[in-house]
Amino acid sequence: MEPDRRARVVINERTGTVVSGGDVRIARVAISHGDLKISIATQNSVSQPNFIGHAGRGVATAVVSNTQIDVEETGAVGFLAGSGTVSDLVQSLARMKTSTRDIISILRAVKAAGALHGELVVQ
Image (tube, one colour):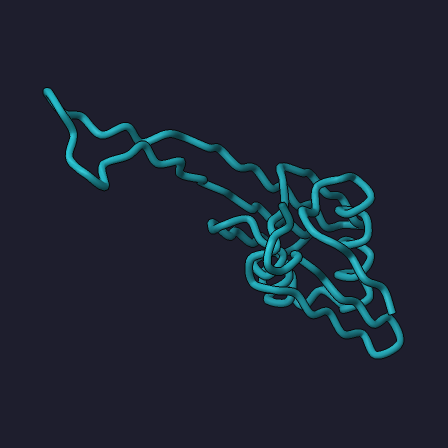
C-alpha cells in the first residue's frame, strides 16, 4: 500500500528556497546550531470515550498528538507550540531571523538524524 502523496521537503541551496508540504512531520529531536538551540517533543495520548453499555456508531478511540517546539537563541527566546511540522519549525526560525542557509543546515541535520518523516530533496 502506497500513500496518495509522499511527504517531501525541497531545498534549493543556490536560491536559498525551502518548500515543504504543511503536513511533513518531525519526530522528537533536539538541535543545537551555533548559539541556537531547538527542542521538539511530541507526546501522544489516547482519548477513550466513557460509556456504559453499547457505544453508538462513530464512537471510537482517538489518538491525539501534542507537540511542543522550543527555540532558544542567545539574546532572544522563542517558543512555539503546535503540530511538530517542518512548516512550524521553519516559521519559528524565520521569526527569529535565522538565515536561510542555517535553516537548510538544520533541516539536513534533522533528516540525517532520522527525525524528518518525509523525503528531503536537495537541488
